[in-house]
Length: 115
Image 1: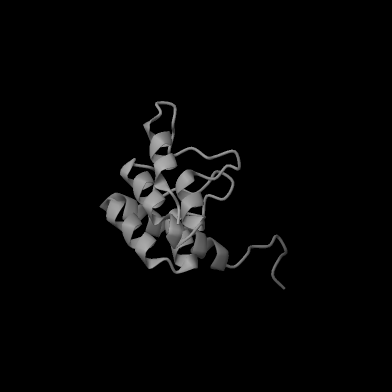
Image 2: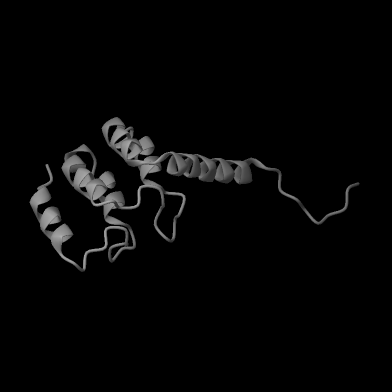
């Protein structure tokens, strides 16, 4: 299991930005979620620090914290995230995913003239 004491010490530093990506570009919340159930105490600390629970990393915006939970079937972490979201965030998360799905499923237009 993860030792949250190091995370707690880092969160107390004035220079800590819980919403910014690490050297690899992924925010701390995403990294903790990728580590699985053993990192739930770290996830809880990050959520208490009011990290961004809706956005994905800059290069892969669609990989939201909730999407990571769904992919890993991490129900406890998903419940924790949903508990931190405000109603507008829930709507935004739902709409962003719907727009991605709609764009992926819509027929592609071509410049060729119909026959």
